[in-house]
Image 1 (spheres, rainbow, N blue to C red):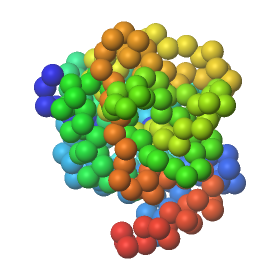
Image 2 (image 1 turned 120 degrees about the vertical axis):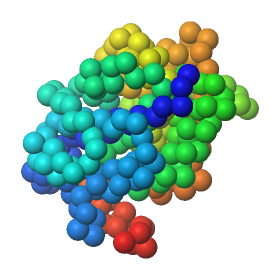
Image 3 (image 1 turned 90 degrees about the vertical axis):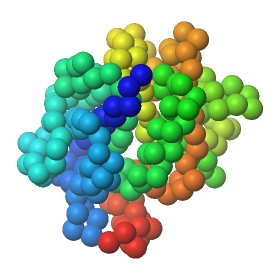
Image 4 (image 1 turned 30 degrees about the vertical axis):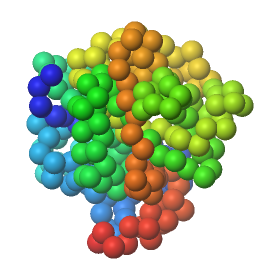
Length: 247
């Protein structure tokens, strides 16, 4: 494993609940499109490669981030997070290092959380590591299923697919991961879409890697607020209030 680091930002969504024709990641907090808030953080960390996956009205996103050192790739059909990452395969060809997967609608992911995630990944010699959060109300989120009493991640079960016992877990998947890049794209070839959404979930790679006997780690964020995503105008407004001191 080299010390090279890349980032793939998933930014293809329309955001139906935003009640707007604007791509979700171009909605603004304090006059700044949310994807730019995230990209500013990533650029500060000196990644060797940044890839942004666009889809809905992707030309608008492409124009908005033209000044950033990022390669733009397209997800023409929204078939899930796993499918979105697959679209970056050509842009990531030949990259032997650690790849961060970040969500373009989670703007306040901090540099310190990214470093903590990557440190855990490196120190545990994992093939994949998930950044999690502990929530009082985990409804709607994918649940973290650990090997009991360890930081070994067995699987992530989406809320819609989770049995009652798993829904009692209050540790959730933030959607932020890092992977050994070669293992990531190799494992993506094995995922299917046999689930309630008929989508290719990136999270399915976790169980596949664990079941192969490979190390998968999980580390909980110290500040769950920074892992909040934007799915509605109300959530956009709430985030602006929570992080008002950032501007």
